[in-house]
Image (cartoon, rainbow, N blue to C red; front, side, top):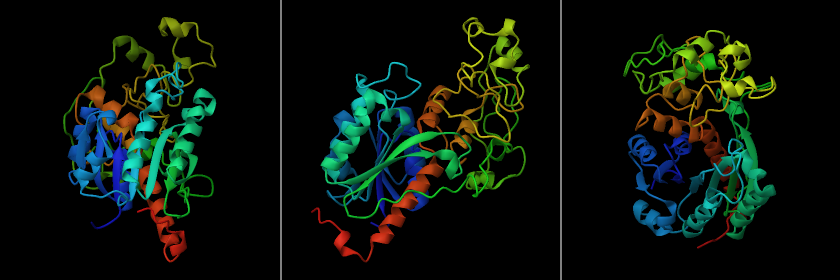
Length: 379
């Protein structure tokens, strides 16, 4: 089997596996309970097997049979167990949430496959949920299987993603190689951060509620980021605007770039926000600013919850715009109803971040070659 291999658990639409593929890995299989996400993964990863259903109902043997691998042969097992139980956006978060224990299923598959490397991604809330119980349990569980593991908070914007996004990434291996973290590429003394203008400016203009179907680009690519994401695509897919009500259209007229609910006349605010302090809900009814990065792309780009108003057009951003902000290439088309497409985009690891993680693993592998004493015989 040529090239390093990866299996993606809780794969969703396949953001992490797409990044690993861009880094040089061969994606062999993915699993997710979400069938809309699974349809997207299957169509965008034709070389891989998609195993549908709950991870509770799958065994490591299922993945071995699907891929033709034997235990110990897989290079990387990647995955991001559903994280809503830890999310700062979930105010009832904690270890009592059953989704907080899905990482144990991830570890069960790790034990059955014994990949050389593992990559696990989660929200930063995992570090504080249950007073850090979940975070420590993940580290202890991985180490109990014989892996050296480290965890870091990675900021997507420091790797070229035009979005403020913080995620905890666990990287581990059982082959004695060093843990290498991707080097930051953007920020102070590095490349300038990728902006919303870099990401979205070439996409077709839409009115509130408008759907032009599959359409042409508005202008030629005007940034290196657009050039990269447009490779392999000649048309724009998944680009239709949700229809907002008249009251929201009236509110948006008052919001400048970089503005928010504070710019909306008091009498036009929702009842609940009339009682809000000026320091509260800083991103609500926010209009994006061309020269900045977006706020975190969530599973529902609702203007009531974040800065999801287009910089110039009086509408909320589209699935394609959210995907651009997540660094998905334009040929990567999302399946299912629009609400489900937003879920797929918001849940994903930005492919560009996944690519950097994949390259870091390959760098670590290369640095350990020629040092056989580092290779731990595990079967």
